[in-house]
Length: 202
Image 1 (cartoon, rainbow, N blue to C red):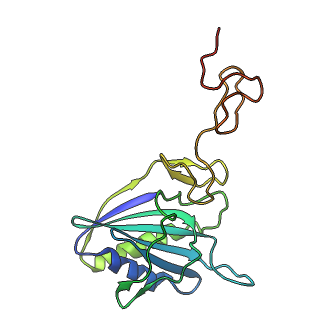
Image 2: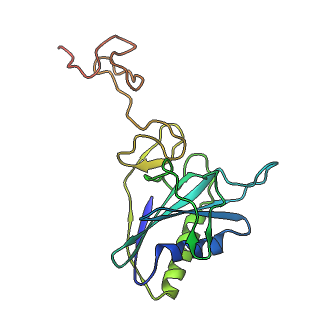
């Protein structure tokens, strides 16, 4: 995940609308959702198919107002299927679904479904919009993440489920006696029977 801060007279809604205008065309799709304190924009690459060209994965941007500008966090998540929710006449329609929330995933997972150049191009379009509005770019930081053991997408530290595939991110218990990795939630080792988490007698 990557996070940029922009200082100046820019709004989360205005930036989101600019991203929709630029990226919801050609070989990319974009959609936006609104909450009280942030706007979410998803940008993905169109996929040819029999029933839909909606992407499976998308770059998801959380745009939050701060005291003197906006903060933008980018990560990868699944494309929200109940989409088509966009800005009309400057107003948001629909609310961002509860289950589709932070923490966002890493930019790229093992599935390789996102063009490696897309994040940089999106950041460049944000920088252009901010520059044209007379605002300034503040600090940029990489957020610490933990990789998903199932799909490889990294998630924010402390997340319990993967934002891309939903797999558990809780570490599997390792037996202190024999070193065997056991299923999550196990109380006894399924190789040697030692109680997990208990001190091993010497």
